[in-house]
Image (cartoon, rainbow, N blue to C red; front, side, top):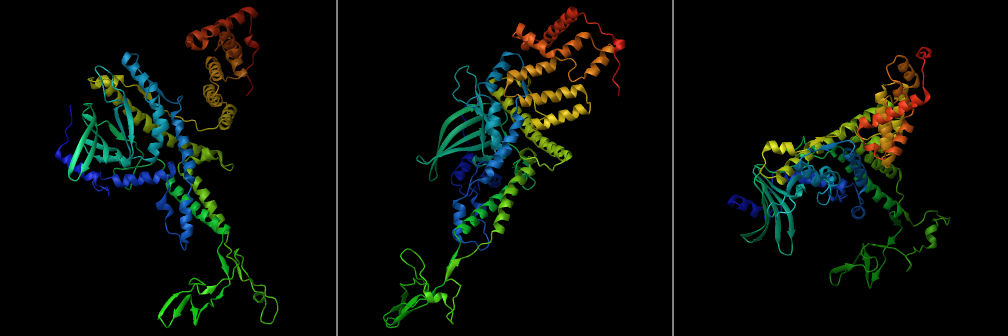
Length: 583
C-alpha cells in the first residue's frame, strides 16, 4: 500500500527545503540542537568556537586568532572516562535476558544476541554506540525499521534500530515523524525517512522553483497503529518543557570553564615565549627636498597634498637596525649629560607576570576534575588519601545511584522497546497477548562493579573480623574472585565451584567443631568442607564434564568421596571431648 502525502504535508515539505533559519521545523528543534552542539564539545571533541570567541578583556587580536587555531579538545578524554564508567551497566554478569523454549523465541534470541547486523548483538549496539549518542544528544530518537525493505514471500523481516540526532529530526507530529537522511549536492536531491502509525517510507525530493518532485525509494507497511519511535532520554529539563538534558549536564559548566581557562593559558604561554618588545626610537628626520617627515607624513605645499613617509612608513619614529635585524645603538645612548655611564638600554621586552598564568592553569585542571565530581565519578577516577571511610561510602552510593539511572534507561526503556517492536516486525499478524509472551524477561543490573580489588579485599577482611554471616562472607569472596580472575575464566569457574559446593564455606574450625558436637551437621559435611579443593580436583579427573552437571549430581559426587574417607579411616569423633570455644 503506497502512502500518498496530502497537500498539508507537501506544503510543509516545500517550506523545510528552503528553511535556513529552522522556523518551519518542530518547536523544540533549535533548543535541542543547541543542547546537542554544546555536548558535542566534550563527547566528540568538536571545536567550541562560540565559547572560544567570547571577548577577553584587552586581548590582542593575534592572541585570539592563535587560541582559535591551536585549540585541542581537552575535555574529550575526561568525558570519555566518564562514559567508560557508564559501561559498567552492560557487564554481562549483572543482567540477564531470558527467553521461552519455543521456536519463535529461539529465533528472536539468535537474531538479537548473535546475528544482529554489524554489531552481532543488540546489547553491543546499545553499549558501544547508543550510550555515547544518548550522553551527547538526549533529545535524539530511536526508530525501529526493516534492515532490508525488499521482503519476498514468507521471508522474515530483520528489524534494526536507527538512532537519529536532534539535527536530523525535522518534524514531530502526533501522527507522523519526518527524519532528514542526507543531501546529494551534485543532484540537488534531499533524502528523508517518513514514519507514521502504519508505514515506514524512504523517499527523496528535488525542488525546482515551485515544482516539487518526489521519488519513492522504499516503503514497508508495519500496521502497528503506533509509531515505532522513542527518545534516547536524559534528565528532564527544568528550563525547557518537553526537552531532555544530558545525564552529563551537571559537568558541562565546569568543562566549559576548563576549555576557556585552558585556552587562555595557551595564549599566555605564547606571550611568555614571545613577549611584547619595546625599543627607544627617535623622531623620524627624513627629508624629501625641502619637505620633512612630520608624524609619519611628508607634506608638499606646492602640490597641496601629502604622502606616507617612505623611511618610517607612517610611524613618525625611526628604528636603526642592521640587515640582520640587530638593533644598532649609538654610544651616546649609554652616556648621561655629565658623561657618566647610563645603565638604561634603548630596547627590551615587557615582563609578563607568571603568577596569574599558574593559577589559571591549576583552575583549568581543577575544573576537569570538578566535572567528574558533579557526576559522582571522581571517587573512581582518583580516591583521595584524606577521605574517610564514611566519605568514600557516600561517594560510592551516589555513583551507584547514578549508574542505576543509566541502567534503568537502557534495560527498562530502550531494551524493552526494542524487543517489543522487534517481535511485532518479525512475527506479523500476532495479537498483543502473543507479543508479550514472545518478549524476553529482562532482569536489569542493580549492583555495579565500582570497587577495586584492594577495596573489596579490605571490606572482606573487615567483615570477617566483625564475624558477619558466613553467607555474606561467601558472597563477598565470590565478588573478589570474579573481579580478580575475570580474564582467566577456567580458573574462575573452578574457584566459584569450590565456593558453591562447600556446604559450610567461611565457617571457622571452632564453629565446625561446635556444630559436630551439637549434631547440627554430619561428618560428611565436615569432611567435604575440609577437603573441598581435593575433592573437586578428583571429580574433574574422573569426569571432565563435572562442571556442567546438575548441582544435585555434583553434591552427590562429593558426598560419595566423603563416605569413602569415613569408611577408609573409620573416623570416630568423641563429641564429649570437644569443648565450645571460649568467648
